[in-house]
Image: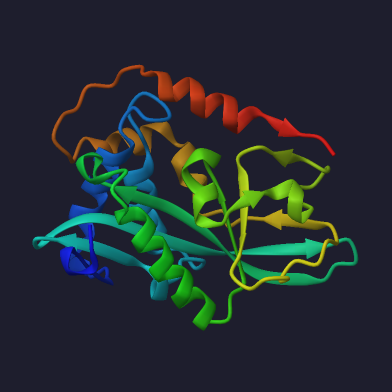
Length: 218
């Protein structure tokens, strides 16, 4: 893969259904039987925390093969000081294009854009195996946690500017953009708009369960 193989551009309205289907293909049966990420993307675009300036897709041969989106989030220290940050995700790459560097290129492009916008920290909740090579580190190394000193193994932090986090304890407050995804019936109704796919089990679901339920201790 080299730069002449792909185009990175902003998502447009005409891309919406193609990107939603891309997310469905990328995440189907990956973390749970079926998936909800295509619905998540669908509702995210109208949420107040959605960062439209960082809504990018990647094209190869005129086909959208990857996308990434960001939402606003906050960190708050023990004295109540608030820091505006970004939550990344979902990052979607069609299965046949995964592990070829396309997702890396898309992330790096948007990291630069985010830094230009004044953001210096990005957080996402995911499999560390997929993100540590992109500069993400465990939340515990930056003293970032949920309320109650809860440090999930899947909570990953990236500094876009070295030293942006100074070691003080920060509590992470993500957007509530994904709350509608808890409505299984709404997810199913939206999924019915797409070609039928069979839900099933695969080992990656157990891997996701282990990562998402593991907690680090200081």
